[in-house]
Structures are given as C-alpha cells and as structure tokens.
Image (cartoon, rainbow, N blue to C red; front, side, top):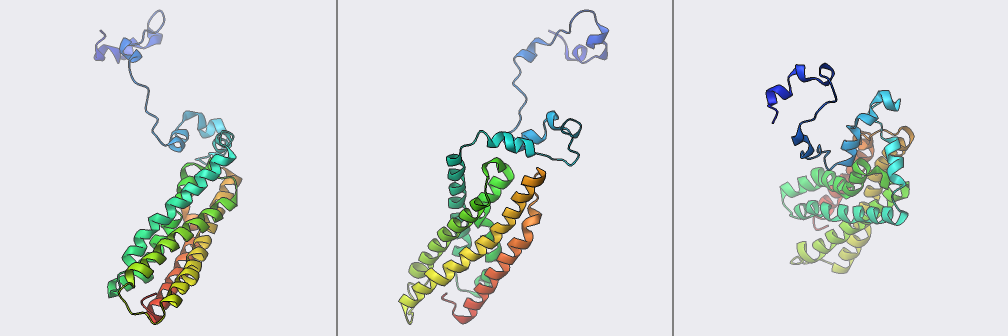
Length: 246
C-alpha cells in the first residue's frame, strides 16, 4: 500500500519516474465523481463548455445543449410536461386563496398587497421550472399560454368553490345565484387575464434564449409579472371595498 505522503509527493510525478504511471489500486474502487442531479448545472460546469472551446465568450451558453436534448424529446412528451406544469401551478396558488379568504383587516391587506404577488408567481411556477431547468422541453410560445390558462382555471375553480361553499356558507347573501355567477365569470376571468399577462414575460425570456442560447434571467420578466400583480391587486381592492364577500 502506498502511503498518502508518498503518493502525493512531487517526486512521484510520472515524468520524474521511468516507465508508465502506476495508479493507486484504490482508485479502481472509488465511486465516480458526483455530477449532481441538476443536468443543466452539470452541463454548465463541464470543461467541454469552456469559452475557449465553445467560442462563446458570454457564459453560460447552453444553446447547443438545448438543441441536443430537444432532439431526444417527443412532441407528446413535451405536451405532457406542459400539462403537468399547468396542473402543478394552480394548486400551489390555492394557499394564497385560503389565507386571503379570512375577512379581517389583516386579511384585506394581504388580499390587496401580498396575495397577488404570491398567486401570480405560483401559477407560473411549473413553467418557470421548465424554463430554468428543462428548456429543451419548450418548443412553442403556445405552451406558456396554455399552461397559464389551465393553471388559472384550476386555481379560480378551487377558489370559487371555497368562497361559495366555505367562506360565505353561513352568510345571508341577497342573491346566492348572482354571487356564484359573478365568481365563475368575473373572478375567473380576472385570474385568467392576469395569468396570461404574467406568461408573456416568460415567453419573452424564452424567445430571447432561442436567439442567444444563454441561461435565462427571470429579472427580464418582472415588468410583465408586476403588471399582472398590479391588475390583480386593483381588482381585489375594488371588490373588497364594494363587497368583502367577493
């Protein structure tokens, strides 16, 4: 067995000894270097993609990696992943609806200022994940619009059921049918509209990535998300002043 001190001694460098280099036998049993579970991070850290080899000075460049991975993905698989992203985004945002449903002064403040931020971000969470971690699954801007529409419908549906059957169950409404109609039309429409506006920011990032092949920076989507959040907050403020039950 070679002692560690001898093994790392500079005098044992291969070029200073005759014959071929003799590796430590224990290296044959050593596990492979961990690359991590994140395939994008592993790819970015690979020496094969150093600027000197890729010719791309602006790092990190992943355009070729996206194209390589995209060829291995099926159209049906990409649609399935998009649907899954939409189905995940809606329920995540329900947490905000649950907290906002408590009619107190603190809840009203939460409804106007914080709920729009949380809900609009979470409704896009599935597509944000795909855009950041698996961009090769994205081939059309329609995927973002589809996911935004579905996640908004799921969220609005759950929220409407909670308001109609839970939050206002013990209240005497002047017209329960009109209340339910308002929630299933106006409230649902607002959620879909705001979700579509936020998704435009992700589409802008995706198109830019298609052009330059670089990793996205979510900061570029902030103006679109901020617009959706402001619209959502203004709507919540209006209905809270007009009728807290809504």
